Image (cartoon, rainbow, N blue to C red; front, side, top):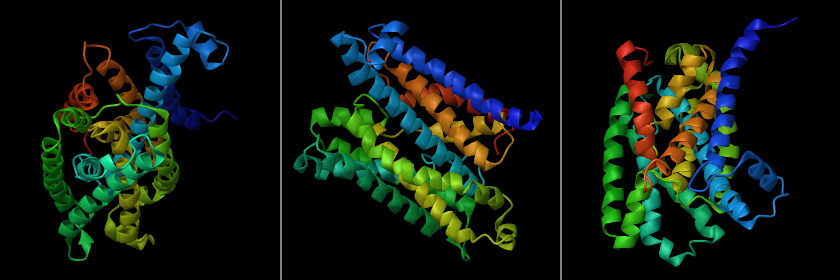
Length: 340
């Protein structure tokens, strides 16, 4: 028997996946050097013998596309989890300080330790996310400590403290960048605003283990996120250890965001906008909202990154392009009163 409800639930996933495939086609065939679909397919299949096409696809476009997909997926999943954790649609890893803390940790690594480690070595690639995670954990610890009242997490205080901590860690990152030599400062300033300019396969491989480990944890806890929306007392009555689950979800979100920030820099709005779009497309549970948010995040970052390095004569920071795309949508949501 044909299940209409199941089909209706899958339609948003099919629609976003179709748009993602269309965006992939557009990005991999268009740029400063256009390629035909046939050339792309032959090169990807290993049947093309043009070294220029191979270099363009495998050394430049494909790593950047894959990095955009990985970063978009990770930030969107973490953003959806944080919004569910705080029960506040305005929460976002960037707004509540996680991104700034992770960014500051990575800036500490770049300023104090990167010169003593081979930048192209696997050690460097895997240490950077660890410094980011340490920074993200530190900011989260400070926020949790300051937002903990009467034995429970005060969500409104959590968000306000997050904004303050975010500003503080952002200042640390800017201070360290100003102490760098001019060449490093230019790179660091661009990185702080988000960039996939240095996309390569080793960078991608340094992040994938974090996502493979932590994303399933968040999706597995989708049912718990649904229960947490009922409030602490109701969740406790249903057998959920609220503080333990909050901590686990927060740690997983911090790990994902820190890993993504380590290769892309600070990219705001993805974790804020993608979950809202997902909730507009499906009124289902978090087990559906989380993966759909990830797909939407992939689409947003892929399109924004392509626009950022093709619409102007110089590279536009990723965060700027995403803000141009996402802010108008979010303003419409606020006007209609649909932020929840």
